[in-house]
Image (tube, rainbow, N blue to C red):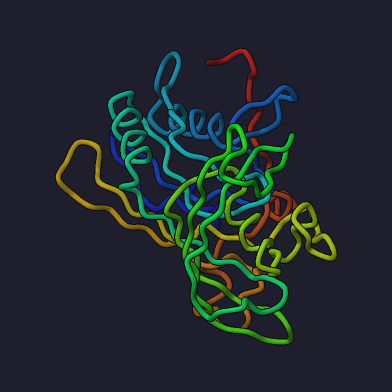
Length: 255
């Protein structure tokens, strides 16, 4: 476990740490010095192995703050460089689950758009727009109930807010995602998007690693959830804090 009995670590060795990120926890330190996954990982490694001095933990990809799911952190610079290269070359397989409003026009499709940053958000653009980047994903419908749909999504590119924008663009905003067209927000600002599976090559061994997170407690998966509640992580960092978690103090002056 990470900092709570229901905060799973999926894998750990000298080069890697693969763990769960709750919704509402940011990935790295910002100007507000809020608790963040990368600094917490450094503290956890330092305490677990009684390491003196600074601890290395490298971020090689990110999840949006409101998104929960699997994250891999590099524990060595060699792992960071090799994992980053896999992400650049598209060798990392990322699978998501999303609960959306409405039903998509097709049960399965490949969406291809051009995207532009628009302040803190992103928007659909024409190919000729300066700075526009191609965004490609595939989805298939897994269930629907009461005008909500459960989609499995795989990314071919990794653009900022890509899934959120592209699903909204076909009339299916992610539940809770008011920035991209959802009719109402959810508690703690969470959205029903889960980084569900992650697959990549080990950075130092000829091994393909694949991980899958249990669906968090309370996540609206339209009746598909299997397994006992007590074996599943909590959805948001606020729910961890409400269940008794006291996050360790992160010193903003520590590298």
